[in-house]
Image (cartoon, rainbow, N blue to C red; front, side, top):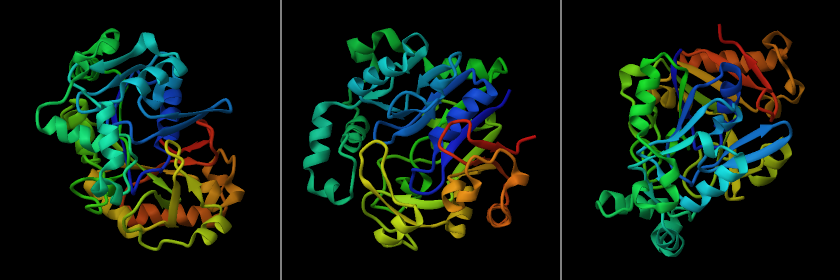
Length: 332
């Protein structure tokens, strides 16, 4: 079975949670490793129930999937414990001994620092926590008594799973254009968000990856400050049905039309081999609930064909509604 990396394309909010939850159910994932931190929520709709997950991997929907949080992640302990309880995954989730900890002081710094406030951070404390880790003074998961029941060597677990031909997914957070190195600096997050960094945080070498699945949304959104090419006025976004608020923070998302040049760049930087496209039903309402590619209207097919032509990779999963299983699956 393959090892797949899920990466975001633009500034996050692409619907990675939906794609991950679909793959968990459809492909019966054995392992899912979440990377990143608490400042990005993955939204999962399953049987009309909505989950906005900051810590627990979106693959929790498949009850036989082992859920892991990698060594490169930053754990907000209270949020982690809250979500473990809400998703009932205590018996099958693990946290790497060396994952670093976000403390209350980090959140205070995040919310009170004039510099960080100007960059439009979420206020969770991720940036200050990363700073402390770089200084080698951060607390790690192994230092936190509440995390003791969950501690494990994620790197060993996931590599053993890959070697045993298990079905493994590495769950990235945020989008490529928020990368500390490749994004719209300084209006970026405090880490790299590329597929390469996802592998690094999970502890998986690049030769063990079979697919890099990049997730596009049918239009672009961005929260906070920073450039957004082609940005629409809020009134126009509302008129088009593109106006959204962030799943985790409730902040308003700015919106813009799909950008093919940025799509090509993010495919290149992620080394993407496949693409998923979400919210096609928002761009083309007549697509809502569609289950086959042939049933899509011609304009929607032309849009998908143009993405494939411009990026050079196939669009293999197409989201046509909010539920995890509202997907057209074009994989062989």
